[in-house]
Image 1 (cartoon, one colour):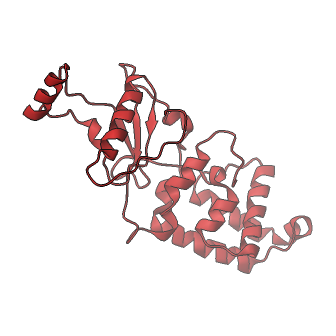
Image 2 (tube, helix red, strand yellow):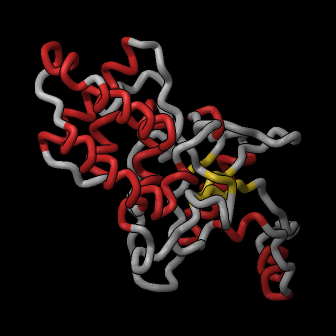
Length: 233
């Protein structure tokens, strides 16, 4: 079961959530870290010690077990760093493709953004946060005539459009996400001092009212967390 794909189905109250809890607890006891998209918070309760209710104790005794309430190590992650550890990534790690989608750029604007990343790579410049990207856009605009012959047409109007989209992204909280230290896959592969695997849960947020450009950041960052993944892939 642990090495394949499992689909747990059933009516309300049939034990789907408890099944997942038992699986997660078993992995933790075995020293295996667990990552779960616990949107409604059904699994996160394992972070607190269970209550030894009389009917549970009696049921366990009837089955020949001693009921022992337990708790497990849990780490919560939040893009905005408000309800958990902040999820972060650098501009360079996200790449031009995903960044273009987040800013809703058209093909021409996306092409110019690719030029920005290419020039930054050739110059050995790291794009860590929004300030770095904004400064690089200014550099591209100031040297548009020279860069056009090598990479294709770069207009200041297009640069200005990207800058405005970047401002919108920043106003929606993008500066909290695009910074260091960037999340790495190893951050999820943790055990506590007792050797139990840590549970990693992204904080579930309501889509309504959230900044549109940042709604999919946890998914984007999960892609970027894998070392060796091609940028923007």
